[in-house]
Image (cartoon, rainbow, N blue to C red; front, side, top):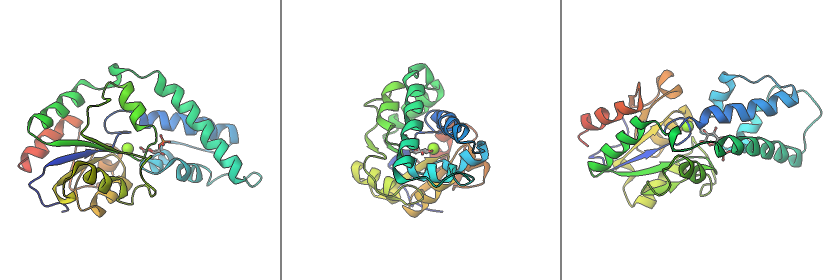
Length: 221
Ligand code: BG6
Ligand code: MG
């Protein structure tokens, strides 16, 4: 088990944990893959969880058999995906925040825990604004302040640094196996949900986000 408690902070991944933008990532990459005639499904999409936009592109392109793509063309494809993804984000509103997520976050905050975001996404702050959580978190570490994406621990170590809290006093909540690996590498207690929980990763596993309250109670937080 990683982390040592008593726990003082919870660092949340965003896409696939706080909200379901992981599905919009899927739709964005699927549309670009379809344009290229490249097969792409949920199994491939699960490999994109937690990894950066350009690394995601390389994974999506693994089955590609056409003319070699220049770096400029790859950047263009990633931009096309992001533009389509941002259109979907633009349709999000506070109604896209599950009430049980908000209730659980408020419960943790009422216990005196500090709450942070640790996301590989460069769209994280925009998403938080869309779903009504702009300004809610005590710290945000995202794709704009890291040079290495998960499973590297950088994004979570930065979150702990921004909070001013020892990483060993932090709990991470993640839907990506790469994110659980990153949390472990940061020396944090790891909690999985969604795909990462399905794959058996993490010190504790959630069936639903609301189960997090009990996990933290069991940890004495
Ligand atoms: C992560 C997602 O949160 O952000 C990845 O799990 C995604 O799938 C990464 O590639 C980067 O996102 P963005 O919004 O910067 O393209
Ligand atoms: Mg995620």
